[in-house]
Length: 449
Image (cartoon, rainbow, N blue to C red; front, side, top):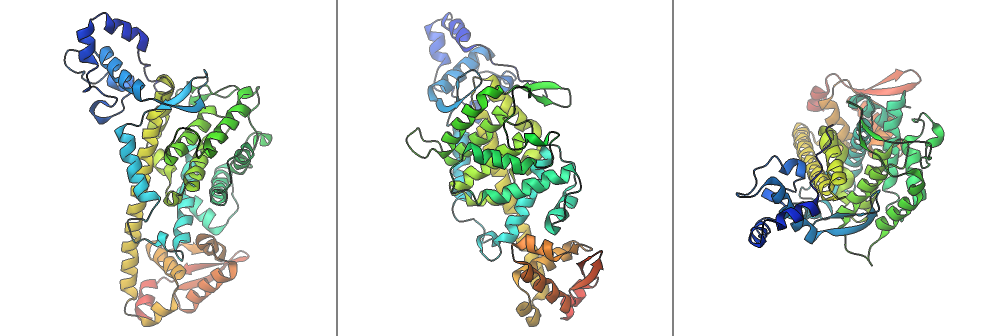
């Protein structure tokens, strides 16, 4: 990845502009040149390719933009490697995206969706956790296909290799987060989260659940060309920086107000910036985002996968870090990128729920003529039937059904055996266990029952 061109020195630009006279400076700092040229929070590396306002050079244009931002900077109690505070600007692109997330993620969902129904929400929650576990692990190098990974998690099968172990660990960590949202964040909690996420996946097993040692020199490298993208703070700084991170995470009053979603994003940023572990930093950082957002009441975010969106454009993810590091620790770039990712993930959730609603409607239309079936099936069995209609040949297990719907073993067993009795599923022996397959004539069976 190409390192962004760092902006010209602001003080040097100021002296140069001053030499052009008061009138020139007045025109340059006119209100029409604000912090977001064209509505975008541009880095110098982007702005230098745009057409500047008539009569000004790119350098003078940048000076005007930067001056507008400096007036609005909000400093944070988080520090870069040089001891300078990270800072950001509450520009319109941020306010607009925050409004959308506040509307969609903390109140009533816009759709009359099953995730708002206590009886069916667990099915959708497990699906979301599976997706986040897979894609977050793939961002860190896991190579297992989504289909194989989904079958492993849903069937409760033991991981066969390192990639599957990464995904299994991520799934367990994501499930545990919702159980800890009422606890304050502590260094011990972060270390425990890292231990769960990296169990049986590290070259040095002793590195799980501990900070990196001074002898463990860590660099963030673009593996395509071995270019060094980031050198994190030294190991001896990490305990203090982690304490600072936890204080910031737990702060609810007494300091400058930081919107809960921005706070969650900044936890993500700061953990990844510090890179306190030999491996697994990205997974821990994204997990902290979920912990923070859920702990502040943004319940819908438990059903989205930010890693899925990040995986679609990983270069933009890395670039937002580089923009921050090359422009006076201005974390606005990363905040805007992550807010865009969250908005896309929410849109994908709504599209997914729309598809599910349509599939449910088709299935219900198919079952509408049978009073017996309407009375016989519960929502878990209907979910399995819908899946079987879409995915012929799928093997189902009692353990997989239990995991998918968060029910006890006996309930899952009763569900599947009930479908066998109706001819919807076929029970077969595979090794020492039983598996269940959809009847080859499933649609005909539904039509005839």
